[in-house]
Image (cartoon, rainbow, N blue to C red):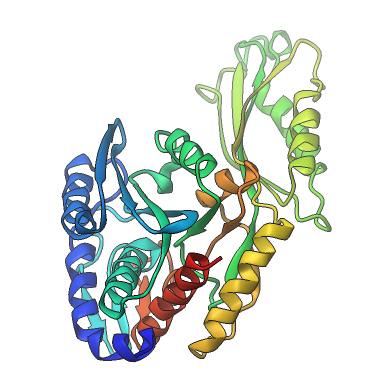
Length: 373
């Protein structure tokens, strides 16, 4: 029996598991919620191999080592969500061919996908490579306390599979933009706006000049964008603003572009006499640039998808994931292997139920191929 044949009649049980983990609401920084999910993970993945739980200020990391063939594969999942507890009127709802709930698409559904891929291999006596499963609690807030564990795990494995959601059309992800967060601050001099404004240096005016220079660093052809999306400054309307700050979101396809933009941001010069500038922040996630080895991994997955009726392409996306960290280390990385759905981070977040067995079978096919590689 092939995995897809086995999985199709299992769909009701798969949905039960999906409901169980989705209703354990676990927004980032909610330590109690994250603990509940970590215990669910231990219960369900513990039988597959030695399990380790590592505590961090952002919640527990769960690591499971699954014995297998010689190829060493890191599988990355995160179990935090962006939705506050109670954001959904019903934390689990099935309407038509869609299942709705906080994190069902990003990415608790994909944790269930992994669970059922392993169960399917066990039931059918199929092989898999040596697997290191790493479940992290803070991806949605930058993986601050998971990054070191992710990078260390990547370096002791041959390749990385990231179970983030696929592209909207189901394609996998071979490239992601790098993400930078910068703060540009202008410093001026306070003065009474009515009595002696000439003695002041207006930091907001200085910053307005600088924002135009920041936007000039964009390169649409190369996909480099900068968003000065949050601005703060001044104290009261009758005081010349002595300080102002703008937060800048940077997205780049390549490290070369990231380095260019950071160099030019730090080289900005004040326009107003007496004003000064400071630039802080940096690249939060390096770009996930495709390599020959990662494209070979995509081709393997494409073939596995074709066997279960999925036509998969190599997608590129502007948002980052933990795959950005592993790809930047030179470890072949394939992302977007998760369940098909839509509306990530929205109150209509959902997965497409009819394709769940095929997406699990896709992962089964990839694991089978890697077990014999």
